[in-house]
Length: 180
Image 1 (cartoon, rainbow, N blue to C red):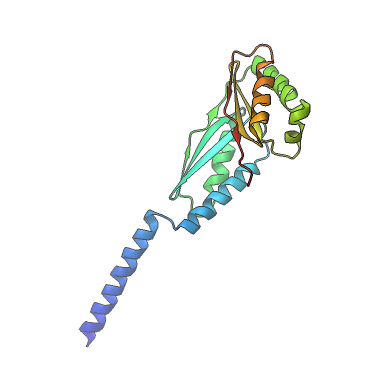
Image 2 (image 1 turned 180 degrees about the vertical axis):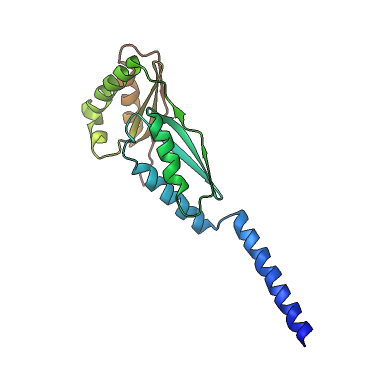
């Protein structure tokens, strides 16, 4: 009788350990969705995350990969630190690029901001704390990242950026948000 009880206990422990190790390999869809939502929230709440920064991320199991470009080196480490402390995140792969500091790039950022957000057709995007059109400037080359409402706004933003003097190239990576 004692032997049967011992066999049952050992079997249950083995099954519990096996089930636990399988859960550790990949989180449930609900857990992954929660991690994604929390990472997005924490990144958007960073105090120095602005219109001249672009941070994206991928969640793969318990690993979060941070991507994008930032103008301040401290923002790269701040992003990693807030994501590291989210429940369920075991590893953070920080691939955020810190843009080189340059007075010329800073001048271009200010001119681009005025050209895009000061244009009457695009002023609606200037409302709110987090601007949907991100202006990334690296050594005189510009990339527009983010989301706009329609193809016309995407083209306006690209034309306004191309109209700023001193820019070597403009890459318009704006995505059109599909309206439902």
